[in-house]
Image (cartoon, rainbow, N blue to C red; front, side):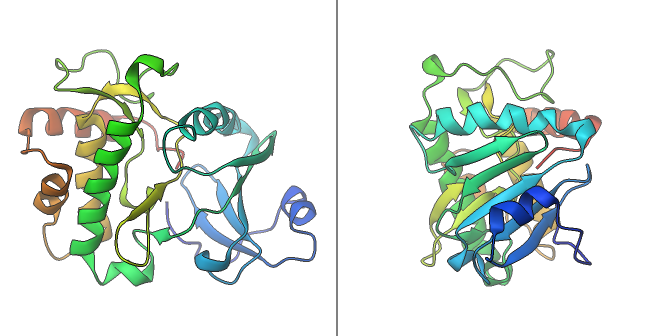
Length: 234
């Protein structure tokens, strides 16, 4: 997932939802999906977002709707405002992505917030009440769980939002949320730090903020599984 290098076409459904409000494409993914911000010139002033996916992978947004609605009862995640074939409309949350320019120059703060935010998410989502199985990429050959939690499922840095004080403000893109070992999230979250904050190793900062020591075996397993799977929908 990355910012678009050139403005992509705005689908009719996005134009209809936006009305006379400004529309900005803010994220694109490798599956051809685009996320549009509606109603503000910056994340801080956005009113809502519309995520669009090509027809071939539109079912992935159908997976996200019930997960957002369930998780919203326990954690800070976007409210679903509407959805249809190939699109998902959500209310904006306060905060900015951990890879926003406000935080790209403060990687230690970002890494700490991502770790603390994942811990809060894992502690707050009840495993016993979760109706969703493991993230699609985890597979059936995982090592014995260190601790079963409700995983985000795509815990890369961009999917954590930070408040202005540098704390975790919430999470987005929960289309693969489900019950799994906490290392399914931690392995990917730490790996993504190298992509998003190059030049130094911030993985220990994230794990310390979460409150856990590194587990090399589980980290290696879940990273292999992630890298062996098709691109995440993000």
